Each structure stands twice: as structure tokens, then as C-alpha cells.
Length: 160
Image 1 (cartoon, helix red, strand yellow):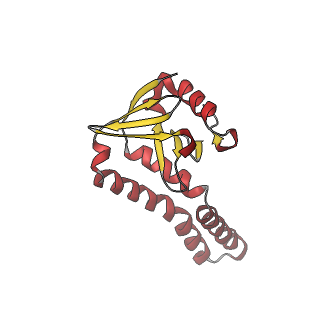
Image 2: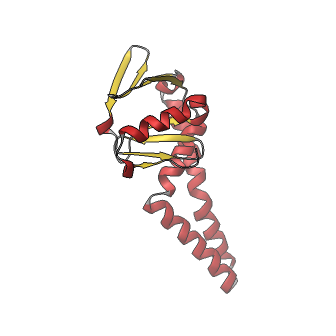
């Protein structure tokens, strides 16, 4: 089976990925819990300082991630051109202009879905982002290829 499609990276796709990556990790969960704890402390004690601190902690991370995703999008020239993907039994080949790289299926660590993308991790911090809108009608075939070639315990794609 071969599947080909183009992906154009956007600020929103990067932001969606960064939100997922951060809020499924320890620091994102801990920060949210501390923020909620401070808001609960405000309700119990009535001190506005707790409310202010809690809101800052809860709202800071999404705002910082939005700014970072925008900056990364604007500063990375690779995001200005579309990526062409070929998915087959060997792996996923990405081509942009004259550069091409194939990532074999056994080099992929994890596959997850976010509200806007399918994300294939090649390490703990490196990933390929496939916006669902760019996959279009090929989304089901892409998910089937990923599910077939990757270890089932590594594929966490839901709600497709």
C-alpha cells in the first residue's frame, strides 16, 4: 500500500502539538494542579492573592506556548513550503524541495491524535505533525497504515 499527500505546517498545528506535548507531560499536569490548588485556596480563604497567582499559573503556559509556536513558525524557513509525504511498507518518506528522508516504521516511537492533528513521535521530543485537514479523505488510510506498521501499544489515536 502506498499513500501520498502534502502537508503545510501552520501556527495552529504547531500550537495544537505543543499543547498536547506539554499538557500530557509532568510539568503541564503539575502546573495545572498547582493553579487549581491556588484557586481552591482562594475560595476557602478569600485572599485575592491566591486567585491572582492561580490564574497566572493556569493562563501563563497556554499563552507562552502560543507565542513560542508563532515564533517557531515564523523563524523556521522549512515551514514556508509544503512537505510531501509517501507512506508505504518501508516507512514514511518526507520530501521538501530537493531534500528527502525516510523514517522506517521501527524508528517511530509513538503515534497520538490531538484535536487537530495526528502526531508521530520519532523520539521523546521529535515528532512529525500531520494536520487532519491536510490529510482530508486520506486520514483513515493513513491511520490504518500507522496502526498496521507500528506496535499497537504505541498507537494512541482516538476520535478519528
